[in-house]
Amino acid sequence: MLERALRLEKQLVDIRRDIHAHPELGFHESRTSQKVSDVLTSLRVEHQRGIAKTGVVATLGDGHGPTVALRADMDALPIQEANDVAYRSQSPNVMHACGHDAHTAALLGAAMLLVKEDLHGTVRLIFQPSEEAQDGEHKSGGLRMVEEGALDAVDAVFALHVASDMPVGMIEIGDGPIMAAVDSFQARVIGRGCHGAYPHKGLDPVWLAAQVINAIHGIVPRRIDPTQPALISACTIHSGIADNVIPEEITLTGTIRSFDAGIRQQLHDELRRACALANGLGGEYELAIVGGYPPTVNDAQQAAFLRSVAQVVLPDTQIVTKPPLHMGAEDFSFMAQKAPGAFAHIGAGKGDRPRPHHNPHFDIDEVVIARGAALLAETALRYLRNG
Ligand SMILES: [Zn+2]
Ligand SMILES: [Zn+2]
Image (cartoon, rainbow, N blue to C red; front, side, top):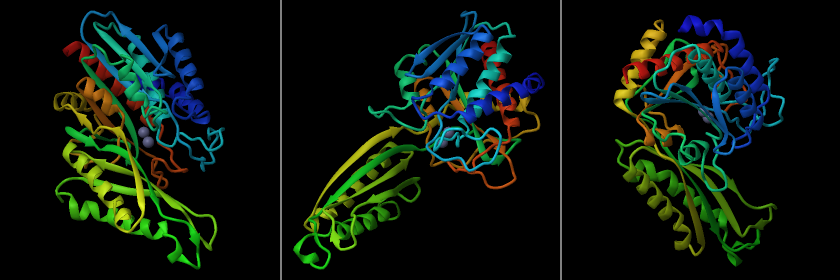
């Protein structure tokens, strides 16, 4: 399978570079989904567009037997690309800085490989929008895909994520929880504005917020069981416009990560108590916590199966079976709640310089695309064979 995929390599790299040059933010992937649709049409693969707004779901096989789903995400990030390459982003402040362009190309590669096979059962290819962002109803592309039935009657679901910080030839496939649950928060700390020279005539929200932030930073080390992974990062803070005016209020936003449902609730409760310090000092607060993604949980049986396929398809690969927990989150988690699944991080490091995810210098070794295509295709093939 890898040999066959490598024969498609130039074509897949061209697709990835085309998508990379024309990145689109979550739920705006109209050109990308058109491209996906064009390739599927050229392969005569039956597919539906407009699922989860800009998603595409394709179906292969004879329909007699199990159904296995393979998933790719298609969205880019609001980042200005700093790489000076021929295929650099042509859209200002939008960049494929997480590798979802490669995921899309790899899944199209899997389609190219699978159309040549006699499939007894169904392979569903899910090209989902907006993994990175939620829409106005706080729903991401993966959740919308599940809600719109893309995972209905699916017996198992698999996905790959490129990892720019891992060398090619390494793959992480863990059992159980592998990536964190994420929630976000927005807090308003409200005082009373006044002249900067007469702070006693108002109530300084900057002072109130300073106490709140200190308390937030104490939650994980002082309130959470030290053996449990958890974090709260206050990531933005906005207030004030003049150096001699004490503002009315201050806004904080941040991210909350956890694995355990009880810890997740405790983080929310403790965050509320930290914000309530503003009350104790005479001010007010408002706190909104927006639920994000659940933890990503690999089904042990499907993870073992994916490892066994990786061993055959990518024999030169080191398979890490107990990867460290990632505090990053993935909306594949919604799909893995709906059907037993496994998610792998596949090494794609270029090795020339650090190219972290969500960074303007992000890039990958493109050999990962054919390798990923081969692994996805063989996973589906063997799943249908062995059920
Ligand atoms: Zn990302
Ligand atoms: Zn990603």
